[in-house]
Amino acid sequence: MNLQKLQLENQDLKRKLQIAEAWMKREVRQQVARISEEQQNENDNVDDNSEEIISEKITEFIGEILLLNIPSSVMENIISAEIGYHHMQSSAWYDGLSVISSYHKALDTLIENFITKWFRKFAHKQKQTVLRENNVLEKSLHAVVSKWYILGIWRLFHILKVIKTDDSLGDYGKCFKKYLEKYRYLGDCLLSDEIYTILEVLVNSEILGKKRHVWKITFDETKEARTLLIGNFQNESCLLYRLIETQSLDF
Image (cartoon, rainbow, N blue to C red; front, side):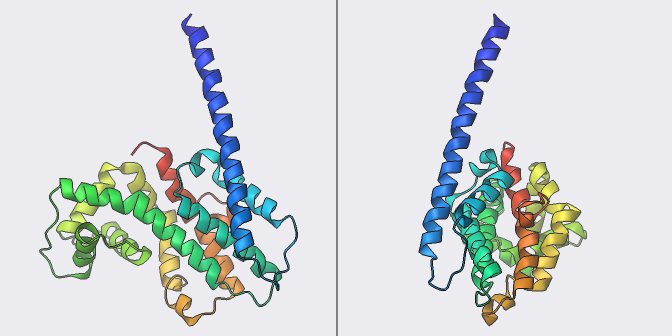
């Protein structure tokens, strides 16, 4: 009887999963079509099936279950970036700025939703809300906790670098380290050599910083940043996928 009950429950779960997968695929296709239409330009020279190619690429790489955990704005920015990248491959006039900007927005949102907001709650529970040291790292984390500042890629890398190199930590730095130790899978992800190196390369390349403000990002620079951020939709060791993957575990 118990076996029969388990089989029925498994069948029900499979049915629900199939419904969720079909729904998510449809959602991605609709978002791609809408964003593609918004970005249409008379100079664009993109093949007719580009929307289907982009939709399939995103759903196959990220997967329907992980897609369910992504904030809608992240999905929209990934789609927008890919449509821009598709245009860039076929149009010499197309600059990589819009592609990089969209991926940057997606990254900022993931950091805020998957790392920062939970750290704020953790810091408040630890009663870590008072700034006691006058240094850049402590002031940054205090602003994140008490003033709702975002934790951008530069601040995040700076914190991880101090933790990883065992440099002296202030109260906020120690609190962030405790936070990563408590939520081990998140700490393991951020402090892994793979992700740390990606963050280091992105920060040092200034592709998400100064180069965005010169209003010209080359195809090669865009291609390199895209590889680090989304792994060309082939390598799951990329930054965005690994951050999204942390949400497949219970926080």
